[in-house]
Length: 185
Figure 1 (spheres, rainbow, N blue to C red):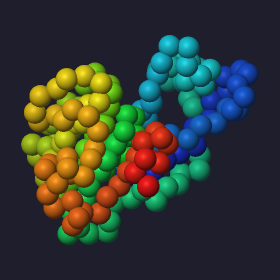
Figure 2: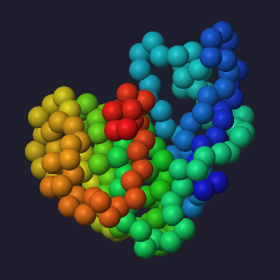
Figure 3: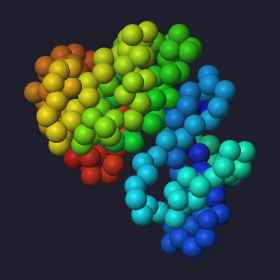
Figure 4: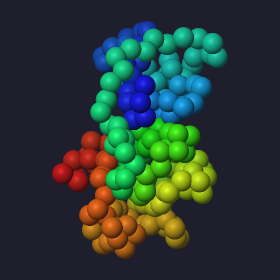
């Protein structure tokens, strides 16, 4: 697979109006030995996620239909901008780890939106990656007070101008819940 792609994951799990299949982005990099997926789990979540969380080590799940064009450019000469909302950060986890492992390093700004700091998946990993690749990490937290380098609120033109002054030179990727993505249309 390539960094940023997704798979269809099939897991028989009893009755569910959505069936036995779900699509999840591959959270790991193609350079890693294991294939990881990431998802948000909530109390009384879907029966699919409940069955997934109940799997024991060594149990199998069927994966198929590798697809997706949420890929990095062919050359690292382009500056990139990533805007992630919640678990929509998953493809960026794959991209950034791939950059580090492959040496194909892009100048990248990651604006990562969440309600609270606790909801930031991969926060520690991104902080570590920013020490070894050209990554500017800007967590944007909407529902609690934070201090720099985090931002309080939402991504606005003013925030972009202040934190990523060259934002117009970047090729932007956007991944998150549909209401967030639709707000940026």
